Amino acid sequence: MIRKDKPSIGAWTTFFWRFLQQPRQVGAIASCSEALAASMARALRHPIGQERTDLGGSSLRHVVELGPGTGRITAYLHGEPLTLVEIDPAFCQLLTKRYKKADVLNMSAVDFLLKQRTPIDVVTSIPLLNNPHARDIKAAIGQAYRAGTIRKLVTYSYGPLSPLACCGFANEARVDRVLRNLPPANVWVYT
Image 1 (cartoon, rainbow, N blue to C red):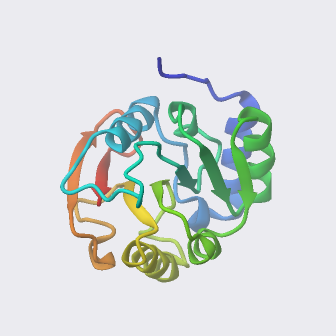
Image 2 (image 1 turned 120 degrees about the vertical axis):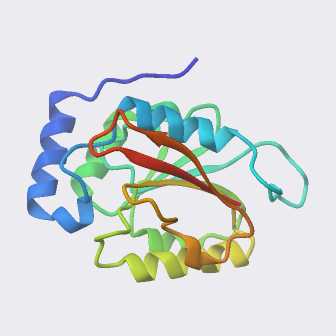
């Protein structure tokens, strides 16, 4: 059963306040919709192309969410070991309170990916169209994929083009167009 935590007033306030302070880092005026969060979770579980597996062939997935913000997508990620990597301390406090079983790390996605050594599946909400660190984030994603660290990556974008086409993934696909989101979003899967 999918967990549908409703964001609290505190989550909405935190999100909006952080958007006002750092709009390019937050990337949207509202957190993603439940429809987009559910689509991202489905995309994580749906096979695409040749899935990479760890050396033991285990089906257990360690899921890492990069840039979870208030945790809207996090609510739909369950049953796997879960790590949340968030650069914003205010969002980290909120995530720690909402998701007690998750490991919440207050660090940049780039630093995390460069240090990660075991295979992971990644869900990311980091805005890449207007983020001042987009080039570094994409470089770290590409490097982690080539090193075999990223088995699968799910993200969304507001534009029609693949946001991670330059990262060298063997397979990429737009798997959904979510109209019930502000603005409408495309869900992308990379393996």
